Image (cartoon, rainbow, N blue to C red):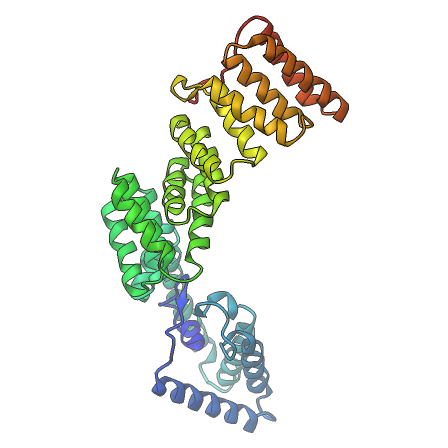
Length: 387
């Protein structure tokens, strides 16, 4: 196959999937060609040593990448041929030179042959580079070479989704799932397409199917959710984590991160409910209590604020840490201010400044000094609205 792609590079593609098993006839024909060329190269080593040198270079350097020990999902890759190709070209070029050396019209014939080869390869080069214009053309080319390339279907679905060609994207994502039912990423892509189309119930169904696809799928799904939330769209990541949290309520860390994402995204009321559920599961986790209290005390959304509840959780966080964490004490001060207890807020903020000063935490000291001025003016601190 490498020799075929070298002599006539008309079916190059970005990814050659391994078929799982090669047809017997292909194996035997390849073995026969290998044996014949090796025999001819050895037999003519004295008169034409370039044959053996080029052939051994080609075959020897190719050994680590021809699949005697399979690595990855690819059957082959164009990048694997770059160095071995030098040997094959030694064989071809030296042999051509040897043949033309004994030909009467060698200059004309040689020039015509070279011109024909250059024209042919130039045409294939122009055609091949045209497939690399963008991700859509690249993966469409891969499917033209192998329509069963499920990775090409999935990656084309991603590119089409980014181009908002959603119907076509759904088709290719669904085809990837049909070809490989345990393809988690393709099922996730179907869910993301549904989210873009404002179909959250349908998206949740796809996400649940992705999680249940195979062992290890939940961890892969979770990593994808974090990646999508940070790199693509926070709302999509939240939707994915919400589905995960429903299926795995005992896995608290993703639920904590979900609550944080909801808060950052300006969905404070949802974050409050997420934190309440988490506190019910882990009532004595100081960091969780502190984060929830800060949200209740300082949220930009009035519907999410609750001073009395914030004080309760902040006091518990400080109690559990024996008032040694300046950040937690500062949260308690903000909670007191939201509850209208400004004398207590001033006392707590002063305590936070003292603890932070002892720890050498200048940023916490400065922050609480700024908040202290608000409390002295009889004003609670509320975060600015998210834009």
